[in-house]
Length: 333
Image 1 (cartoon, rainbow, N blue to C red):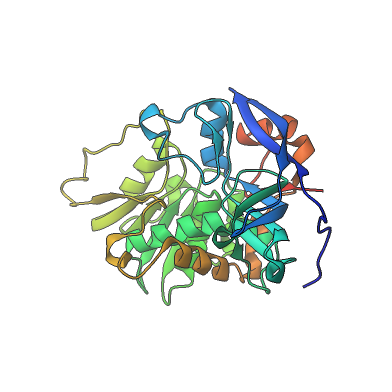
Image 2 (spheres, rainbow, N blue to C red):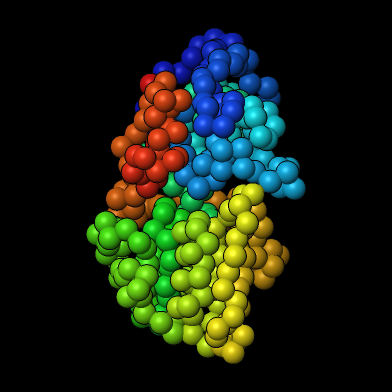
């Protein structure tokens, strides 16, 4: 692998994105020392904004009860503000273990141009996965965990309600099950093109197929949860992938919810499902997620990049939905 811009001396100066108040972002500098033994320095190439989670962080809506559980690896500051957040970065090792210099790695690290982390936290990106596509690894890991929680099987009729990045990755994974019939359900008709490119069908909520064997809800809106419950067949499972922060959520549990004996199951990437915990580690799951990104059709999820220097002005519009995006990359130059 060709080595690029490897610094010869430390300390180096890094730039990091901080959330400093409701709707307010700023760039702060940081001095990066020479990495300790067992650590490496990583120069960021790309990072990804998790639209749902970082929207809640920007609004200061992380519940007090969840503030410790919601801490990202290598986060600085505390919720609600100021906080340096983010958990999907792809970069190049530029310091530390000489045998790894120039290696492209994925890191669960906030948005920052250069940082030191333990060497075992820098996960190699497969050579046939482009660095930009690799920023989808955290979302793919969430989708994979949701697939496990749903126990999706070949031949299932599956609805995915919500066409954000996690919902679309779930639809792609489900569509690759032999004989599965997968429908993405979303209120935005523009999502149809993306869904079909990923091998899934598409329907608006009023036209979505009923009596589904399995339903995933990933819209982030309570109305989407009601749609998901309405699409589930008798004895079916609805897997709730959305996280609402401090917002109260109501769900229609009258009607056929009890008579159809539906199961409403939460899914959260922080825990590996119990039936896999004896064999699977978080690292194995993340490495598997990276391997699943060899799929070139996933590039359709990548929106035009925003430069780190422009992020304080541009990202609030993205997170508020005033600027359309799926997977929002941040570019470091």
